[in-house]
Each structure stands twice: as C-alpha cells, then as structure tokens.
Image (cartoon, rainbow, N blue to C red; front, side, top):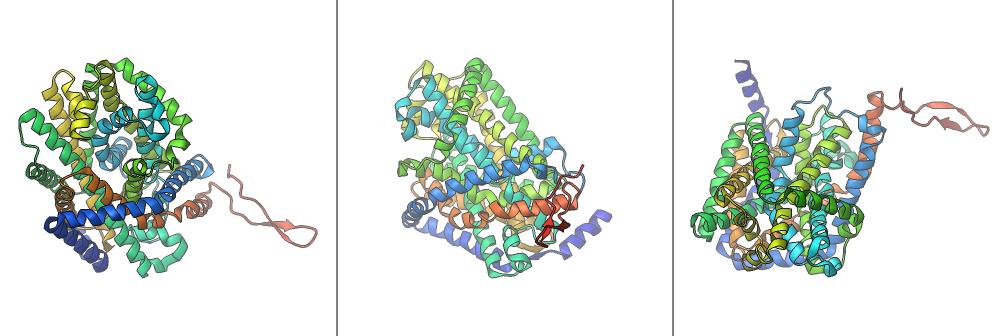
Amino acid sequence: MFSTLRSRASARGRRSDPWVMGVTSVFMVVFVTASLASPRAVGTVVDAAFVWSARWFGAYWQLLMLATFVVMTILAFSRYGRVRMGGTSSPEFGRFTWIAMIVTTLLAAGGVFWAAAEPIAHYASPPPQYADLSGGPEGAAYALAQSFVHWGFIGWAIGGALATLVMMRGVEKGMPLRPRTLLWPLMGERVRTHWIGAVADISCVIAVIAGTVGPIGFLGLQISYICSQLFGLPNTYPVQALIILGLTAVAAASVLSGLHKGIQLLSRANVWVALALIAAIVGMASLPFVLDLFVQASVVHAQEFLPMALYGGDEQWLGYWTLFFFGWFLGFGPMMAVFFARISRGRTVRDIYVGATVVPSVVTMGWFTALGGTGIWLEQRSPGTITGPYNEDGLPAAALAILEALPLTGALGVLMVLVALIFLASTLDSMSYAISVSSMHAGEPSGLVRAFWCVGMGLAAVALLLVGDGGIQALQSFIVVTAVPVGLVMLPTLWTTHPLLREMAVEQGIVAPSRPSGEDGDGAVRERAEEPVA
C-alpha cells in the first residue's frame, strides 16, 4: 500500500523538460529517417564532420582526458579523498553490486567488441610511432599497451571522476541530476533555467545516444558474423537489424523492471558469465603466456603512457583509433556522471575513484589481455590464424577467429554471444535511465519514457548500420562528431571540483575552516591556512 502511494506521489511530481525531450527526440527521428531515405548522403555529411572535428578538437580532447585523470588522482589521494559524497552516510548499493553496475553497463559493452579486435589490429599493423616493432614478444606488449591507454585509466576517469563529484555536490544543493549541473559552479542557480543549460543537456543527450548506438552497432556486427560462421545464418543487413532489435527488446524489458531490479540483475549475471568465458578461453589457450604478456604490457603502458596518450602524428591513424576512443568516452562523460552519481551516494571521493576508475580499468585491461592476448598467442603459434580472417572480413572477425582456433568452438561462441547480449542490454538500460533523467525538470522518469529512449537508440543503430553499407567507419564518425560540444561542458570541472571538495571537507570536519588569526606588523590580517582536523 505504502509503495503504491509513493509511486503515485512520484508520478504526480514528474515534470518533463519539453525542450530537451522535444529537440533530442526530433533529432533522433530525423536522423533515423534521413539515414534510411538517403544513406549515402548522410554518410558523406557525417564523414566530413568527423574529419573537421578530429582536426580541430583532437589535441584538445587528448589533453582534457589526460588532465581529468591527473587532477582526479591527486584529489583522491589528498586529504579531500575522505570527503563523503551524496548527503548520506551509507551507500545505497553493496560494493560488489555497485562495481558490477559500473563495469558492465558503460564502456565495457564496447570492450566486448574491441577486446579481440584492437590488440590483434595493433599487433598486425603497429601504431605509427612503433612501426619498427612489428611482431614478436615486444610487438605484442606494445600492441596490448596501446589498447590499455585507450581503454584504461584515461577512459574510465572521464566518468568516475570530476564530473561525478560536481554532479553529486550539485544535487545535494538542490540542483537537478542533469548535465547542466556541471556548469553550476560557474553559473550558479541560473543554469537551471538559462538557455545555456538547455544547450548543455541537449548536446550531452545527443552525444550519449551516439555513444550508445555505437556499441549496439559494433556488437550487432560481431554477433551477426559469429552466428553466420557457426550457425549458418546469413551475415546480411536484415539479420544484423533483427539481432539489434532483439537486443533492444531485452533491454526494454529490463528498463520496465526498474533500476533496482533490471540493471542489478543484468550486471550480476554479466560478471559471472564473462568470468566463465575468460576462464574457458585462457584455460584452453596458454595461461602462462597471457599472464606474462599482461605484466610486460603493463610495464610498457607505464613507460609509454604519455607518448601513447598524446601522440599527434598520423592523422588518419589517430582518427581511427585514439581520437575515436577519446571522443567517444568524452561524449559519454556527462551521462556516465549522471549514472554514477545516482548509484554512488554515501561513498567517499577516494572510494568513487577506486571503484569507478581504478577497478574498472584493471578489469578492462585483464579482459583485453585474456581475449586479445590469446589471439596474439594463437597468431604467434600459427601466423595467419587470426590476422587472416581479420584482414579478410575486418574487425568483427577477430573474436570468432580466436574461438575457432580453440576447442569447443560452438560452446565458446554461445558464451560470447550471451556476454555480448547481456552487456548491451545493460548499457541500453543504464543509458536510457541517464537520458530520461536529463529530460526531466523534476521526479524520476517513468518506465515508458526510459523504454522510449531504449527503443529509439536501437532503431538509430539499425539505421546507422545502413549508412556506409553497414561499415564501422560510419559508426565511428558519428560518435566523434557529437563529442565536440560535450568537451566544452566537461572542461570547467578541472578547476571547479577542488573548491567544492574543500567546502565539503570543512562541513564534514575533515579540514578546519580558515579564520583570522591575528595581524602582522603592517596591520594586515593573516589567514590561518587550512589544517587537517585530528
């Protein structure tokens, strides 16, 4: 009875934002319609916009991503790391469930596709600055280390870092759980109704639609390819579209079950299924080789971290790899912050940094080593085993080539498809929640609103696969273009997060407030520096 009354009260308190909801939904409908009506023209426009975005904003994205990671690391291990966020003393979710929701609902969905594809791509064709390291143990370590730079600490820090902290403090002060709150430290309360706030929300929603549509398309291509090779299904656009629509239906069912059921259930299931897949692959390959490669790649990662992250040479290579990934993750940033802020209440700054940046990074690097490292091991034992299908059929072929070279290919293929399905459903679920929240003036979004965005993103992925004849290039281009305005929304967090944490540290008794302590010989008032409270 009481839960029914609360539900009715919540429904009465819901107020959607017509501008954000209207503009973003119209954009999605227009884009899908145009892509279906004239895919070639849309592809040409998207590709031209991609080239312009990467050329003018690429270096900025690299610096912004790196600076975000560095500033957050310093704050997390300073005295401000003990500040408790969210206005509550106890976390809403247990630690395992919390980390599982983070790891399996965001960047990891893309990682399912790229974990097999990227390491073998860099091994077969090394990054330009390491072109002389083709093949061999050293080439394998550098190939995997480049993947670590793209998918490790820099990528995860964009969500589990400064933006999340600013968002949580803003919500505690009465601001909405929306991207515009990232500008609150600069603009104050007026960002709630100012047109700049609306532009920020609209830009971030469009960017995360693109960032979510990308993994849907990538995994749709991968699942379609695996099913065609293992089960005889045709690897055609209609089959890819049906697979994506099926994934969308599963995600919509999760959405309608609610935040405390759907995402939690999918996340926990995904952890165990993914662990089973990793154990099976590594167990049938070479565990010593994979462990040794992880250590070697980690050393190279530490040594070459800055050169790899800030490389600015070959524009074509950068656009296809580093700038694509950084633009993608940056576009995801505000909505990752919305989702992380919603599930991280009651945790300290240091806890959020470790649980939302460090742990997911280590898990992701382990996943890339298990799958991509196994591919490299197979390639070294029998050259052409993995690079042959990769060169012939592209990135989607890498994962299946690895599975086909191992015993029990059929069982591993089923596990791989299951992991991809659950990861994608989790991503659609969490991002439809973040988008729906960003479209509300007040209250929690209804299940139907979340389902609308979930289905809309699935349809957008189906349409985007048609652009450029179903190629991955169209997906990459669209993702990067939408990150341009989001990079401007994320920038202020570099200098606004520290004052907010200092204010909270004083409120929580972690740092003593500054106060006048006397006057010097010239009569000037001396301020006592902030000191930690014992």
